[in-house]
Image (cartoon, rainbow, N blue to C red):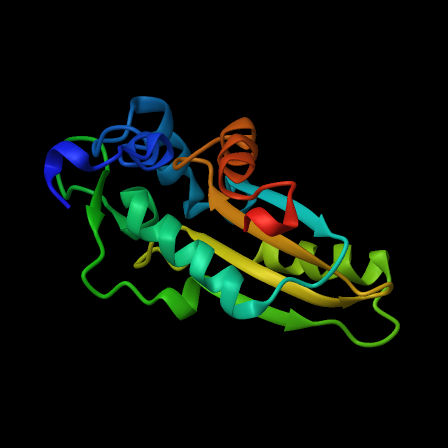
Length: 177
């Protein structure tokens, strides 16, 4: 297909620079550096509950597309030794399977169990040598439901940003996925 005939995917174009510049702002830097004290962790967690359990391979494909489209998902943080704000750099050892996981709840798989599992995920510190995000599909919620627990560092996005991103990626129409 010639360049003239290629259609531009507006979502792909929008995601290409999602997350902003490589150098953190002063505010983002403070959030990242304050975590030497675990009480000051700055984690954003979003839980999407699905009315049915999505096909694992299909969910992985959606995240593979997201990781390829939005460079921030492939970037880790490097803190300068002397002066300057932390910066986002490409993680040459990026491990997709580390970031996109699945977990099965014990029966009966109540909402309480799902929220307890999500709270454990939320409280685990990020591996600071990797991009600071994790997505976990929690399966086995009663009624055939599942939940996606998406955890990101606040230096990468805020609560509204993660919701807006997920609304752009996931569709309400099951067939559109």
